[in-house]
Amino acid sequence: GAVVSQHPSWVICKSGTSVKIECRSLDFQATTMFWYRQFPKQSLMLMATSNEGSKATYEQGVEKDKFLINHASLTLSTLTVTSAHPEDSSFYICSASRAGLPYEQYFGPGTRLTVT
Amino acid sequence: AQKVTQAQTEISVVEKEDVTLDCVYETRDTTYYLFWYKQPPSGELVFLIRRNSFDEQNEISGRYSWNFQKSTSSFNFTITASQVVDSAVYFCALSESYSGGGADGLTFGKGTHLIIQP
Image (cartoon, rainbow over all chains, first blue to last red; front, side, top):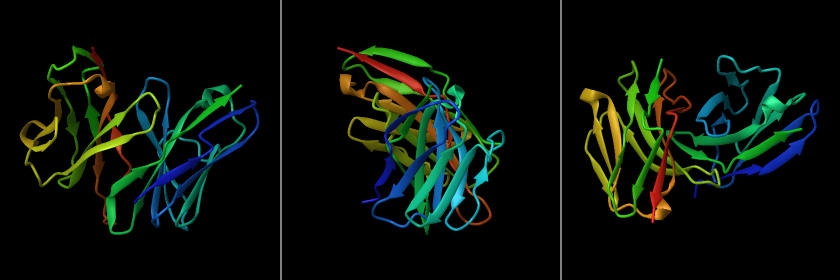
């Protein structure tokens, strides 16, 4: 149990376009979802935290108008990279936790974004 | 603010050797969780262990063992009799609590790239 999926697993888009990444909890209700970004050969950095039905909380330095996060249901959160640029190319990973077990975070397999 | 330091950027050992990955953390909270994850080349994070701040017992799981010492703010990870399949990047991470009773996102260390040579 406690499986998190991401779609797509990889995406290539042109500079200036927007791309949406989905994060789904397949067999549990995710009250909180987190989005991380990982540049090549670097660590994971928390971008934002989203609770179902609430606005996401962004970490310092993360542009909320550029990285739109929606957590409209207990099983789905989306990250939209708007007006993507090559510097947004990265590995994006989501994680999810459920009510009553906030310290158990289940990670998705990640989405590799390449902006050309 | 919380911080996780993994001073070893890369470690290379020969198969069957024991290897210890160091992790030092900083936090002002009394309640927190520490984690270790393995990230193989595929990129998907593999959960290894979670330990809360009130449980200082060491843990052993097969060839893996963890040593948690609050006195030195360390949570080290040892692989005994290493195997080539252990080659990966290993991350130590910290999660603090907040007033709502939930948890923050994880703060990761920079990772240690472990290379096991045959």
